[in-house]
Amino acid sequence: MADALLTIEGLIKRFGGVVASDNVLLDVARGELHAIIGPNGAGKTTLIGQLAGEIVPDAGRIHFGGRDITALPVHDRSLLGLGRTFQITSLFANFTALENVALAVQAHAGHSFRFWQDARKEAELREPARAALDRAGLSHRADTSVAGMSHGEHRQLELAMALATRPQMLLLDEPMAGLGPDESSRMVKTLRGLKRDLTILLIEHDMGAVFALADRITVLVYGRIIASGDPASIRANAEVRQAYLGEQEAVAHV
Amino acid sequence: MHRFALHRVWDTRGEAEKMTALLTPRNVLLAVLLAFLALLPVYSTLTGNYFLMSLFTRILILAMAAVSLNLIMGFGGMVSFGHAAYLGIGGYAVGILAKEGINSAFVQWPVALLASGLFALGVGALCLRTRGVYFIMITLAFAQMVYYVAIGLDRYGGDDGLTIHKRSQFFDSVNLSNRAFFYYLCFALLLLAVYVVWRLVNSRFGMVIQGARSNERRMRAIGFPVFRYKLVCFVISGVMCGLAGILLANHTDFISPALMFWTRSGDLMVMAVLGGMGTVFGPVIGSIAFLLLEEGLSQFTEFQGIILGPMLLAVALYARGGIDGILMGLRRG
Image 1: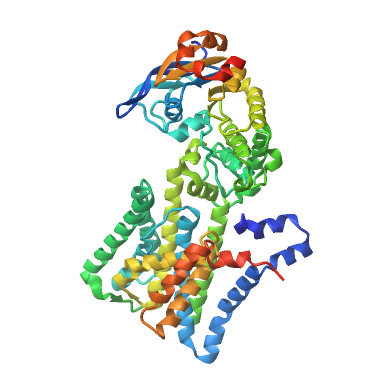
Image 2: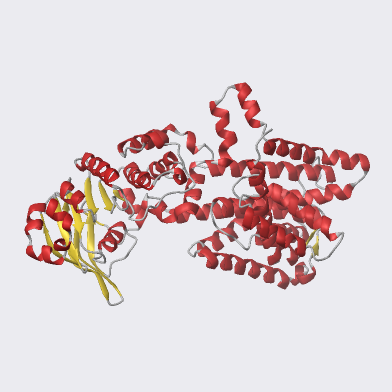
C-alpha cells in the first residue's frame, strides 16, 4: 500500500511452544482506524508489544512512516509519533490527572535535564496537557489525583496521556476494557472524534465498538491472520464466523 | 501532593491566609528545629558544652548523607544499600591527599567530589540495569568492595585507619578547625543540600525521576529514555554524599574503613525511612531522631537495636510517611 503509515512484514514471535505471532503481515494506511480482533490468547497484546518495542520479535520487520523501527527502543518509537495505551491501566498513581498528562507533554518537549525551574508552573507543559485532557473529556478532573478517579476516568486518562505525546498513530489496547455501557459509548464517541486526525490500531473485545469505528478489521487467531478487510466482508466471512464471531452474540446485533 | 502543599499555598491565597496556612504544627516544629540548630553553637560556646556541638556537627553531616540517599531512594525509588561508600570515598580522598601533603581544599574537595561522582557513574551504569533486590545487592557489593580496598591500603592505615593532622585549607581567614565555624559550614551546606534536592525534585528532571519510580514502563511508553535520567540522579546523589564524606573526615580528623561499613549504609536508610522519604526535610528529622536516640540509648545499653529495631518496624508498618508524615497529618487547633 502506497500510503501505509505502518507496515508489518512477516512478524514471528514464539514463547516456548506457543506461536504468539505467526508470520503477521499487515498494512495500516494513514488516517485509517484498523481494528484487530480475535479470541483470548490470539496474540493481540503481544502484537502491540512488538509494535511499541517492549517485545522483540523473533523475525520480521516493522516499518513506521517509511522507517524501519524493528530495533528501535520503546522511547524512540514514542518520539517518532507512535503512541499507545495499555490494556491494564498504567498511570502515575501519586500524581494528579494534569501532572500525568503534563509528564507526557514533557517527554516530547526536548530533553528533561532541566534541574531548577518548577515544572508544575510551566505553561509550556500545562497548556498542552489541559488540551489533551479536554480531548479525552477529562478537563474537569485535572487536579484530581489518580487515586481518587474511577476506572472509567482512568481509561480516559490513559488516552489523554497518549494524545499528549502528539502521536501520528495510536496503538489502543482494549480502551473499553472494564467500562460500563455509558462509559463505553462515550469512549466510542471520543475515538470517533480522533479518527480523522490520527491513524489508529485498535484492539478491542467490544464488537459493537469495533464495528462502529473500524475502517478495516483484521482477525487474529492463534497468532495468525485469518482474515482482513472492511467490516462488511469480515462479518460475511465464514471462517471468521466459525473461528470467532459465531460465538459472539453481539455481532448479530451490529 | 502533600510535599508541595506549602508551595501551592504560596500561589493561590492572600497574604494573611498564606501566613495562617503556613502555621501548621509541622512547619512550626521545623522552624523551632532550625532555630535550635542555628543557635546551638552559641549555647555551646557560652556553657563550654562542646560535646553537644560536636554531636550535632556529626548529625548535620550524616543528615546530608541521608538527604542525598533520599533523593534516589525516596524520590527515585532506587534503594541503594551502599551509600556509605560515598562517605568513605569523600573521606579517603581528603585523608589520602592530606597524608601526601596536599591540604588545600581547592584540590581536596574537587578531587573528592569527582571521585564520588565517577564511582556513582560506574555503579549506577551497572546496577540501574537491574531491579529490586538485585539493585540493592549490587549497590551493597560495590560498597563492600570499596570497604575492602580501604582495608588493603596499608600506606593509609589499612584496617586501623588514618589520622588527618590538618583539616582542609581554604583561605587563611577560613579555619575549619574552629568548631563553631565548622558547625555553621556543615549547617549551611546541609540547608543548601535540602534546597537543591527540593528544586531538583520539582523540576522537569525531578518529574522524570518521580515518574520513573511510579511507573517506569509508562515513562518509556510516553517517550522518556529513563535510564540516563536515573543515572544522572544517581551521580548527583553520590556527589552530595561524597561532600558529606569530606565533612565527616574533617570533623573526626580521622578516616578508617569503618566509615563505609555496610551497617552505616543501613543507618542512612533508617534515617531516611524514619524521618519520611516523601519529603525533602524528612531525612534531616530522621537523622536527628536516630542519632540522638542512638546516643541517648547508649547511656543505658549497648544493645540499642533492641529499641531502635521495633521503632523502625512500627514506622514501616504504621507510619509510611515517617516522622515528617505524622507531623504533616496533624491538624491545627
